[in-house]
Structure formats: C-alpha cells, structure tokens
Amino acid sequence: MSSPSNRDDGMGSAPKQNNQLRAIMFADVSGSSALYKRVGNQRAKALIDDAISRMKALTETHCGTVVKTIGDEVMARFDSPQSACETAIAIQQQCSLGTEGGTLAIRIGLGYGPTLLDAGDVFGDTVNDAAFVSHIAQGTQTLLTQGLTEALPGHYRNLCQEFDRVELKGASEKSTLYRLEWESSNGLHHPTTVMSIRDITQLHQLQRLRMAWGGQSITLTPDNTPYRIGRDRRVVDLHIDSTVASREHCDIVFRRGKFVLVDHSTNGTYVSMSDQKELYLRREELPLVEDGIISIGKTCNEAQQQVIAFSCDGVLP
Figure: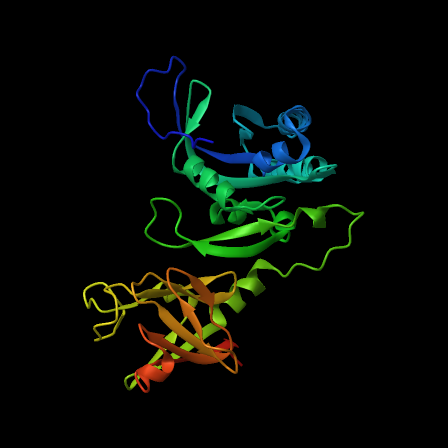
C-alpha cells in the first residue's frame, strides 16, 4: 500500500487550489492478507470489494469526494471536519462486520488543514499526516490528528478520546492523536462514558515519573519525553559513565498513559519492579509501573548501587 506523494511537478491540467482547508480521510481494510488465507481468494476479494464500494458510497452520501483507491484503501476529501467524522462513523458501523473467517475491520485516519488540489488529487502535509495516522490505527479504530479534533464542534469533540502523543512524519515536536469513539454515536449501544478532552489533557499533564541516579533527582513528565540515557554526553539527557553502556543505550517515552523504557543497546537493560522477577531487555521495550530499579548493561546485583531508582506517581494529589 503506497502513501500519497507530496510532489507537485506543475503538470496538472486543472487549476491548483492552494492552501484551502480540507479534511482528509484514509480508510483501509485491516488484515486483508490474513483474510485471504482464512476464507480463500474468491470470498475474501468479494468481501473487500464490497467494503470498498460501501466506503465510497458513504463518502459521497456525507458530502465527501473520493480522491482515489489505493489497494484496499480509500482516500477522500471533505470541506468540513464534521463531514469527515460522520463518514468515518458510518463506515465503521456498516463495514466493520463479522465474517465466517473472522472480522472484517476498517482502520481510518483523519487530518485537517491546508491542502493543494491539483487535477483532482490532493497534496500537502495534511494529506501526509492523515496517511501516517491511518497506519497507526488498528482494525475498527478511527484516529484523528490534533488539528482535526480542535476544529470539530462540541458534540463531536466529546466523542474524541486522547490516544497517544507522537511525532508526525517530518515533525520535530510531538502532537496529540485522538480516537473517535464511533460506537458512542449509535443510540443502540451503551458504551462506557468517554471523558472529555479537557479532563484527559489535565490527567496527562499530571503524570510523573520520578528517578534517582548518582545523587541526582529527576522528574519526568510526558512533555519532556523521550528522555535519553547512555554514554554519549552529546546526545543523551542522563549520562552513564560505564563501559557496558551504549552511546544511546535506552529511552523513556510516554505512550497511552504509561512511561515505557525502550532499549537500543548492545548489552541490554535490566529492570526490577516491586516484587517481580528481574527482566532483561535487549532491543525491546517495557512499561514502567509502580516503582523499581533500572540497571544499565549489567544485572541489578552486579551493578549494586549504580542503578537508576524510579517511582511512577501516576496522578499527583
């Protein structure tokens, strides 16, 4: 499945419409390869073709324009974020359905911002962001960029739940992604109440990870991650002067409400949490919960006092 190109070679015959605000949608049949194996080529193709046809029809019903199909994916544009969300909800409710081979699931990414329309195709950062977000989504998920969420009217914003903080492709700063709780829009369902974006943002801002190393006291918040640990003073936040430490040994990142240790090292990282058995990570990652110690390149017993102690406070009083 290819991503849309952002190149403009000036060869389009139609006039270009610069910097017009549009919502962009990428809707993709998730797990299509596995579906072919489960139900066979003919049945799988029929199911996918039917889903693509439904997605295109629902886009047009909700005042959108189908730009193109890319394999099992539909790309569409809308003049308003609300129309894009209405389409995404309709697609999830009508196309994410059970089959004899399992579940046919749709994953959707939505973005909103300035775009360039050229010969019927759409280009720009907004397009690239929506495509990037769609590839993060799992089956039956609809993910929205921060720009689209902020442009929604109140009713639809209440259906949005903070999902993750990521660096969009080509960006230097993290952006918040939101998940559209499309089940909540159907009166026949009774889903768990979704917290407001304001409440979720406040909870996010109160998260803390406290660490102690070599007499230093360090407090991490989601906004100052990734936090880099390693031997190279020039590129890390916490310098570890040890021959068993790699130049960029590991990072601490914040994902889906948790601080996560991500190891990049040669010798690995050892983590001991509460009463759990010591875990060894090498090119792996682990959520940090409650409290414990992190040892760089050697076991916690071997390191003795040369360990990083941590405590996850969660929501501070």
